[in-house]
Length: 264
Image: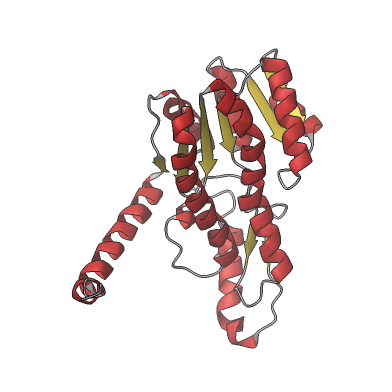
């Protein structure tokens, strides 16, 4: 997905700083351009984030848009995921975007302008299904952080957008990107096998086109003001609408009790 974002931005005439844990791989993927700077960045390392920001400013003088796209997927039942796996999920998908944003914000504050886009997920809106506790925790955390960050940085002319993609055909479900919990609790045995097979079978079959999402983000980033949230994909819209309906139903089911809790 990141490569598609970079290609779309370059095609639209923008200068791009494309980052990855291996900058040579980034250059090989995107090719050469006077408007492109490939930089090594492991988002879990604050020194990498700070160095990437310095390189961007040295080359292009400013940073107008930051896209936080890095993520990993630790799949499995909560009880079977190790604390270390959970921490690694949060380190990449939640703390990583925080590291990069923390490095970028001084530049945007000085400019009194900038736009921070963070890629969340439908699982950051609603996650009432099995096997995604770690991933959903990272995305729900990302959303809470971004919503509060908006209020903090808006006075500096900095805007924020949360993007909730549905099921897009990315590398997230490849063997290199998905990590499964080791089976360890017999009570989950009957359900675990079919779920692992389902997730593996979905790789390469997702309906969403990352190139179209990339072009949509170029549109979103050009809007004044940009949306606080962008729901990406028909399936993501359905998830959001169901979440809204569920919240309304739960409010109405206990409205009288909820409204009776003030001091008399």
